Length: 188
Image (cartoon, rainbow, N blue to C red; front, side, top):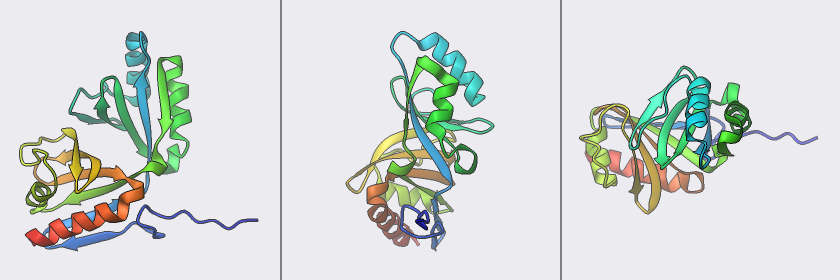
């Protein structure tokens, strides 16, 4: 029998947390992630089923929302990413598909992305060095696609001016983390 152990996107047994100056960078490895797309012609039943399943209305373009279990952010027309605790939603795609039925296409994304939560007094200065996103103007619940270094990422404002999440490709987690740390060190 195999004795396998899961590792974080940065390759460790436990998520890595780094504090540089006033910026805290925390690897997040306890969230399941799935993409959710409304099927053509199914908008009305999709939105009703989504509200029931997620416990909140779907976020509009450029926004994110947090429900009782799921957090969602808009990724494109009629497309969202849904996050939930991995402990209870390890099979998130199946759970969501069962809740939305034929109204949606759902794809597992947990293993494809890395999330880093950023917080602290210098976080906006740091983000301005990294991404062409309006981080200083972002309000709580804003979400956008952006580039950090050469990587396509999502930037979610959790608390205006104080807390953000960066979600980028897991295959480049180490490069993304290095860029975050270098930018944090530059404002320390």
